[in-house]
Image 1: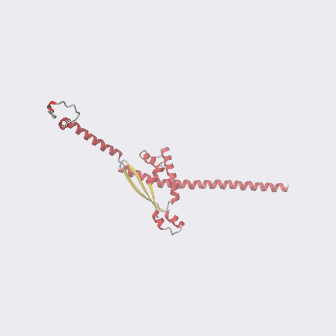
Image 2: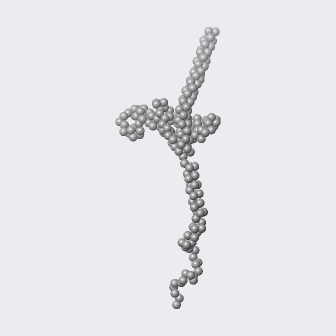
Image 3: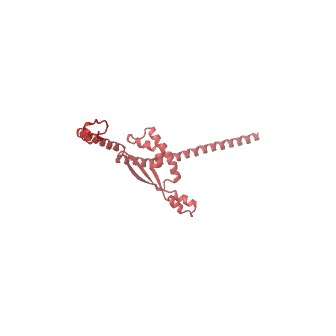
Length: 214
């Protein structure tokens, strides 16, 4: 009778299994290469993290009543356009071009320049009994702006936030003066047109009177 159990030494190993002894033999022969691979992977991982890591800097720009809710809404539209013009005309320093390119994006301002109002939304709801005009005048007062910027290093992030705060001050002043000058130009043109109308009207009256005298 044939025994159901066969001696392993007398059987062919047709299976593809890997024994523990084979694993030990493999590691003993290749441990140096495995260790080198692990170290290289760790170095690449740290290097990749360093390349992707960004630092964030923050600055608080006090408003002091210079900008209202409506004027800030206008600046949010015009400041990115002004930054884009600076980049296009190559008026920014070489190490500042990257930040000015970010300032040219309208979406960047929404995320990185956040105004702080004198009344929060919760406060406004709590003061529902106060007249709407009073809420609007007090609730839309801007106390300050929280400005944030990022960079590959702490120094770069700090420089970028300084560029932004300076651009807000100088850009706001420039746009305000430009708007004022444009207003004066429009007023002068309107006045000139009105004078031309009056001169023509008076000329027609005088011509009519002279015609009657004849």
